[in-house]
Image (cartoon, rainbow, N blue to C red; front, side, top):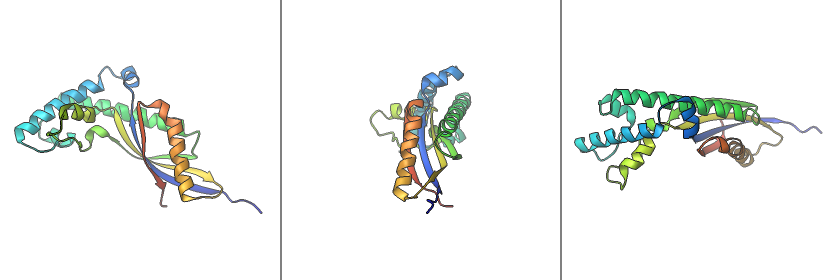
Amino acid sequence: MRASVHVVRVAAGLLLRVSPEVLSRRSAVSPAAVGRQLARQADTYVREQGLGYYPPLDYLLSQAAVDEELAETARSVAWLAGQIAQDTVRRRLRAVFSQVELDSMQSLAYTMPSVRPSDKESVEALARHFTPDTVKLALTLSFLQRRPAREVSQQYARRMLWRWLKDHFSRMEVTNARLASD
């Protein structure tokens, strides 16, 4: 009797922070300095407008609440961080998975901040959020397995992501791993 082999597809989410050392090799701009300046300008705008929340960066740009040159610098650093993350993930995971598909990539700096103006040390937390060195990736990973089992497949994908990527980013989090629907 022959054992059959199954192709298993797992959808995974990652949160990756590219280290300052890696970014500094390819950019003269400090991502942390960009994040601090964006946070100060956003905080000034929010307090002037009397808002109870910090809007996402794209909204602040549409309202001319942040300096355009600073925003362009943030975009270029975010793009660079995304390219480094994407290249590293593809290169490292090629050894483990038969196929690695990038479904989406987004800089964390352009998502809605979870910080509120009333929070203690809100500007510092906002600066960390707006620092364009962290990327959210959605991937679809394929690998072969003799007996596909939902829990085993998801745990295997999580373990392999962690093992093969953890030493290449200053922060690495597997936000989800679930069987992909075809």
